[in-house]
Length: 303
Image (cartoon, rainbow, N blue to C red; front, side, top):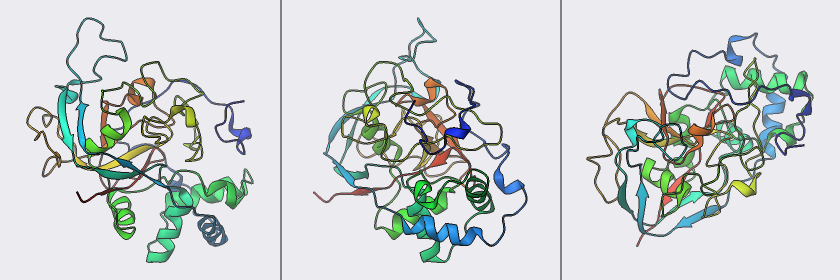
């Protein structure tokens, strides 16, 4: 049996290989649109937070890496070719040394942050937690290592700042995912499978079919970073600029100064394989809450 959701076997009726993309996800059904959970959910929120474990960090050395994709038109449906024209051209980009979380921020960590800072737990997340506990009897301890979800961009950035970090730039995320030689996927060239990544899942009620943040070691990147393809797509610091790649500075590109969407990378538990490519770009409104989007943090290193 795949390692995905060992305590969640009763949700195994899924349809593989279905996705509707990352951009503009606010129209999807969410748990917050259902009946509000009772106050009893608050005790479980605290219980999940009590099992929080902080992610280790991985140091990425300063240096050049290949970012983006060169246009190819001969085999348009290959995973080696571009997803769209926003990832042109492939360029050598220099990044100063930085650190990035080895794991996605967990649900336990995120709930502990909300409780410690007096921020509300969103209706979507409260409703989902209550459903998983009251209907499917998943214990608090089993939910704590899930990736954080239903997180806005601002909440993700605030979490990182509280921990003296920040969201990674799009370039930092891509270097962490593909190494220095432009790998198609974090693990290399061969296509994704259910043994190395969480993708291609579907559930009619948007119950996220995710895996624990420290699972699927076979799919980690050259740097030893987990779930950079699939599981939960990840917010980055940058605005999504469709024409930014040709003009971005070759050293430490900061992303466009403004935009409509924030960059989301890596694909999620619902994505088709093409969304798991290390160069594929997606985006969402910063205020969006989605069962498909979480985050991890990064921090600069002084030279």
